Image (tube, rainbow, N blue to C red):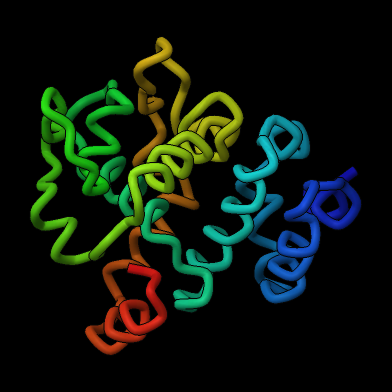
Length: 192
């Protein structure tokens, strides 16, 4: 069964409707793009929230539509693209998203101040923690796609192909193309 057929047939618990709407919203280009970046077994390795944010990220990567923007995904993709480190602790990833912690530090190559100025507020401490996990944790979409790999219980590692993964590249390009007006809209909607 293809990845698109799985997205249409699997249950994603309370997020099933959201996932299906994202597939419909994405249309033809989504149906062509997703199977190129996600094999069926990769989709099945994602937890419920990972799958939800995966389809959302794919739509943003394809269109730059602000309705598909998620601040923590944007932070994580920016950190992956900019990082000079191969391994990133969850604590440092949370810190990059704006969560203060006494013993956290900047990810090498990633300026927390610049990301914060560009991407705005990533959310509450609980939101940041859960969204970093659904991206890079054991059932996270970036882990399932082979962008990150689970390190120990406190960290994840970037794979050798992380910075060249088509989803990461396409998403980063959409971030680069965002206008001040798009960021103002996201701020007014409370997304950043």
